[in-house]
Length: 438
Image (cartoon, rainbow, N blue to C red; front, side, top):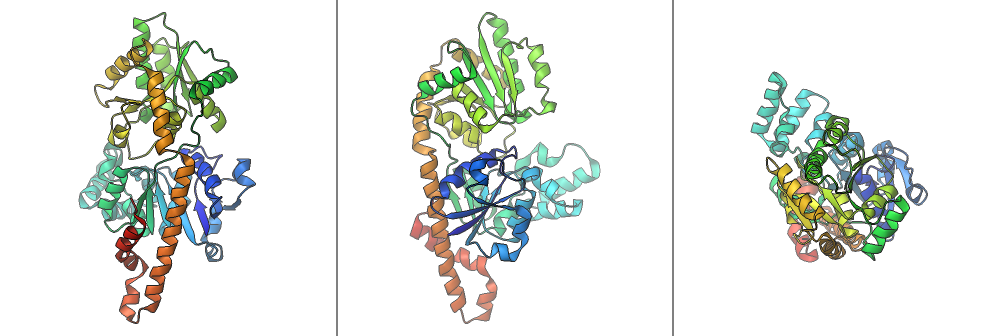
């Protein structure tokens, strides 16, 4: 089996790049994979171990004809996914959906107002199109920002695909509503490392980072945009420091900080210059090092657009209790290893109260960290997930070959003209029965 794999890769600053590089190195033990890139990969384990091809070459039929299957990693960032989106529509394959709401990327992907209106009509219906048209005429807050769930703009990608991979049961149900004949496989987002000894892991990381073992340390990881709620966390910590001025703690913000968030000013306003450390964008190795060193982590997310968090799964794999926003699929993580924070008016107060419990010893974050490790080992192991990918690809190709045989044997010209996809979907029940697709 030979697979064309289209995804962001480092040096692109994308969590999907990190995800893909971890997955393909394991998957390459089972299948032959070529990688199609936007920027030349700078990870030597990727550049030297794989055939890496500029993504524009995928437009050549003689290139595409080499592969049994095309796999597209689809995310809501036009900078990393423009060509991937284009080819997923032109040359159907399996799409892996990382963000259910694709509106930010699609608005920039469409080349005109008329193209956007047509896309939204096909994807999300008349009402969504009318709201978009009103915005174009009258201005105001863009409707895809006001309520992305009213116009996720994902349907055309699903309808053009041969199959879809998602990372949560909720997104599987959503895509089934968009396109009830879609073939969907749910595979949990992996973590690359499940710690052997979580206490030793933390101790060694702190030694390398020159951080005292006695100081409470916690952090937020990934791009520090408004949706990661870092400003709200700082405000809650400012309230805590005002009440407990002699308490020593460090809060690390590890990841590129979006300037508009105004986090530096917020730190000064809350008298936290000695407590909050902004690391900015760091290498994946450094990113993981800071995470390992933490006592616990914060992984808040609002607004939420149906994405899954690779950073959260790393936290759990390292045995870290995590704060998460109590929304959608994040609400499904066990209470035994996560602290749920409501979004909206109660967010800041809830953050303060829960942080106070942890920092004052009222919450046993060590026990919750052990629970997190157990959850990750059972559900998020990369080796186990890789086998699921391989089995799904193998089973899909087997099914595709059987369906092609049926079409080739059809005497009725009209039946031939029904087309591959329609016949494929008619065989979906056979596929599910045969392979027990979840």
